[in-house]
Length: 189
Image (cartoon, rainbow, N blue to C red; front, side):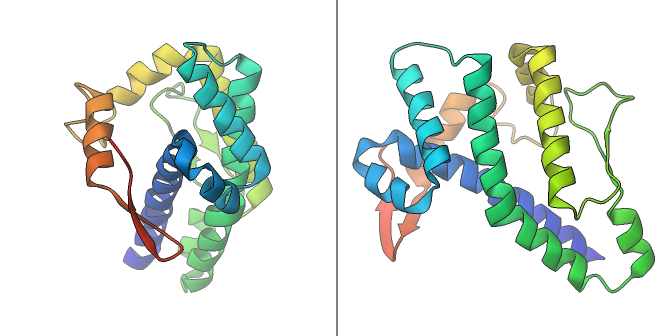
């Protein structure tokens, strides 16, 4: 059971890493060729639009935000999450727990308390995609500033994140060594 739980914690860590790495890789013009080798075209284009908007002081439209979310979410579900979820369930030799684990009620801090995302089969990639888009749409309806406020109250975040998330990520960035094709790269601060 501990190994099963750790497999899901590892999936979450990997998704967080892939999100940050993809964003930072595409933010640095000197790494764009490398980004193109590692990311699907749809995700690369969506991230480049995001960086362009940021540089020009523009805000992505609702459609552009959903496209960026979808490009990343669909890629990480296929490349990271699905293989790891399938392996975690395959390694769980406890049918009763596996049955229950496939039917979680997922709660995010910005979702209404009485309206968790209810799964019939968490192992099904199409259902995870549908629930992910449902969570995104609920966040969009709630308003992203409210979602951000709710997420900042989440106790799982490091203390250094809450007062200044930008400074927190700058500190991480300064310390992060990234390996690409056997080469060690330090992302510039």
